Length: 420
Ligand code: HEM
Image (tube, rainbow, N blue to C red; front, side, top):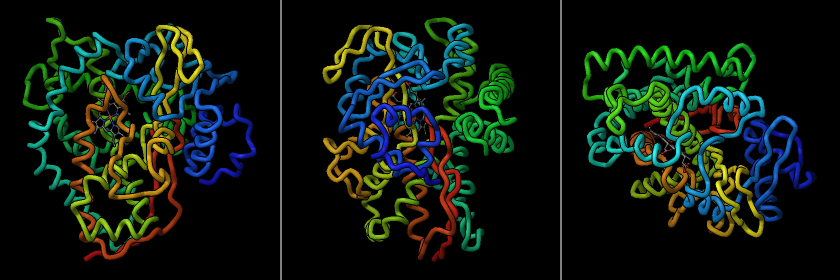
């Protein structure tokens, strides 16, 4: 989608307000035009709008890193992600519908994270290599079956990471399509293609209710008959000697099923698009597969599927000469940080050999993405299986990005290809 506004024609306040709508994230060049202006002209920008509680928008890598590292001065609660005033009010009155790691702070966060953190360590993930390779081969087979034309985003990238995370959770394959629909509704609540009943907030409530019903059933099963899967760890979790709370348990299932899905699939389809748009880099990677690790990180920096998280200051805190007052909120724009000219040489160049690559797409500090290593492994497995088979690949239609201010990436990537 292309937004017909020249970012240089906007006032700096309007550049800040552009971050309030998912539309901005459907047009990469518009987003980067606006973000680049903010980094250079107003890196700590106060954003106000009648429908949204105000906040400081941070667009520089160093400032985002500093906030992430000061997790006592900047808390995830109560406002971990951007929503409307109405949604903030509802949360203040009723609390979170479900509570996951990203809504918690220490010591609660530390206690809950340690319940599953071992699952995501190399020792355990190493055991998944064979399953990842099998699922990656299935994706390649799907492309062979596709007969030279496929929607890579919807038909390949959306499925593979979901299958991986649901395999880890231990859910039956027959439930995968239902999970796919629910996760897309959850993250694409702003996008008419995914939202229910044409109403973002009401649809979201229904989606969450469906998740709750489904996972309550899984909990009951795994409590009665525990297995060695991740769902059993969550269902039977004990925190400080007490069984894990219901909201926290649901939050865990949901964050595992959702955070591990759209994010990774968005970097896969965005990664393939970047390779198609930079054929020299595709050829370089095909000729030298030892670049796969740096290529995968470059795809993740390039796409930055998680567009933001927020924090609330507990003390008055100076950032670049602006005092963020205790109680005020800041929004961390990862996509902007990952194009920061002060950190990345030639940030708008897609370079499969980029080293160092200190991107913030997985965040930083105590909330650093629990699945970062898994995501990298999944991407390596997919592209290692796929790229040697690709003889030629090109766009067969317009790529389309999801309309969301939170997790966004390609929902459609029609491609034409020839395979070996
Ligand atoms: C390319 C793919 C991914 C990206 C870009 C991504 C990005 C992120 C980001 C930005 C955060 C917040 C970090 C912060 O606040 O500092 C996060 C947290 C998290 N991610 Fe990921 N993620 C990805 C894949 C995954 C996968 C595969 C899983 C698997 C389960 C996962 C699970 C989580 C969890 C559980 C958290 C919460 C951690 C906490 O608050 O302690 N993510 N992720």
